[in-house]
Length: 151
Image 1 (spheres, rainbow, N blue to C red):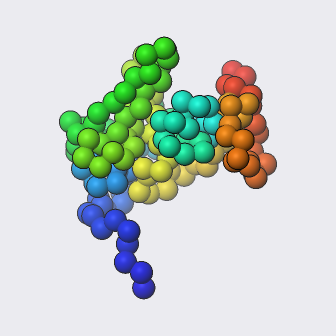
Image 2: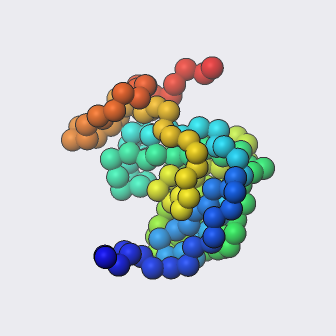
């Protein structure tokens, strides 16, 4: 059997609670219940901010989100010309971290930081007009040039 790539303590699962952490485990968080939504964003900011083809993010109501430990270990970078876009990461390992958006009432949680299943799957691809030309979207999820229309 192959050893885990990263060996670190992870909190025991709790019923109805989704947990997550950074690569080194210095930052850990959790949220209750079902998230508001999960989408895969292909905008250039998300691609650069996550050094990936896209960023799959989970949106969680602020009142259900809480830090377990390590919130003081989080650094962030706000894109100067962006109204809301901020990238948060662990100061120790550089791993992605959630960012809270009080003005919008939710936390944005990078899906790759989740240690337990959130009970939701991506609902759409957004900003596909900005996607990396080398990355094919191979699923049947709805695709939007930018933001999806408001429901």
